[in-house]
Length: 316
Image (cartoon, rainbow, N blue to C red):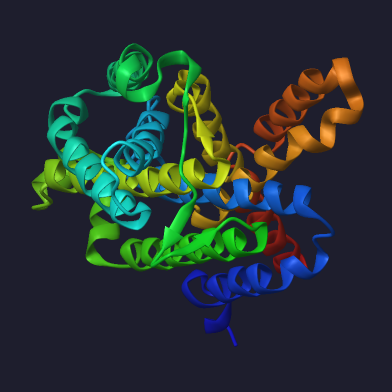
């Protein structure tokens, strides 16, 4: 029974059960829309958590990869006439290659220099998307064709729910297996001390580049699905504000916690919808919730709650 509640088994089965049962409790298209956006953000955060939580490498420009994935699908489908699925896959491969090229020089930086480097990368991507008016539509954005596979056009929310839910589940499964593999142990050693990891034979650069590419590909896939689902995209998807939201989701849920990243994405995606009743006090309430969490649950929601449960059990 103890093995069931290990993250790779119990947590994954719980996530699959939630995804399978949740549509029963969603009364209309609005709730499906919110949950689909949660799934998209959660998929990005699962990859970003690998980079920040396990490898200890901050990224303040990750929305750039999300935006590139969105525009890759939009442009290749619209201008080149490629099938959406092929555009999505080619976009992910191209953005993975881009991440591989820029990863080594950027990840040589440390601390706030690394943060500034990734921030600069995100800003460059955002500026490029804004300036290339003939390709991207510039600041006004561009429409995106409906996603279709072999002539089957996907437009209803329920079908999109299962597609996004499936991607989240597969991404989580792959991430958990990666974390429990020798690669995951190498990432944790890099996070602890790059010098000590290198001394013990860990190829620090190789593993940092690997996790950077994986997180970029997941962001690209999420961006492509978002583009086809929403039907319209703008360069704001690759903006600095979106990058900060993604990092906040990871930190709120709990760094080095895959399910924490999912919980953080769910809370910060749904919270603005729940706080609309506060009108002018929405941002104040939003900030107070985040600040309270960081003060009283410094490790993030999920790790802090797990520690609390263990402490209660130990006291019995």
